[in-house]
Image (tube, rainbow, N blue to C red):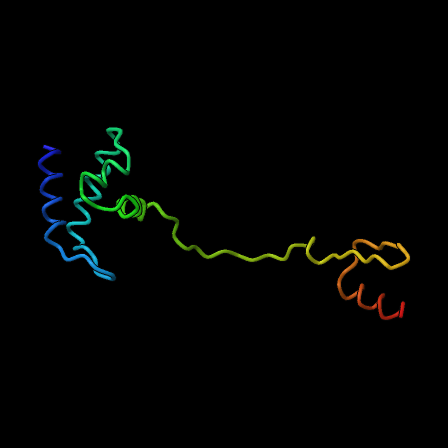
Length: 112
């Protein structure tokens, strides 16, 4: 049964035009993804599956991993207190740590 499906898909892929920017029909792609998942669960490698379908390995792998990719989700950006602190080292070797950038600028102006 799987061999017949592989051969059927291979023929269908052979009939479709291939070129930059041209996509395979979504129904054909869906059939290939379903078959690839079956073959992967039985231990086939991406390379073996792609070879059986006469497709590039990355094409098959990307198709099968499309749905599992993370979706964009809103996030809340919170200020990191560690980013607000700086360290100033004077030419004399004096080191002042844990001050804000504004405090460091004020200090440097006064040291001039």
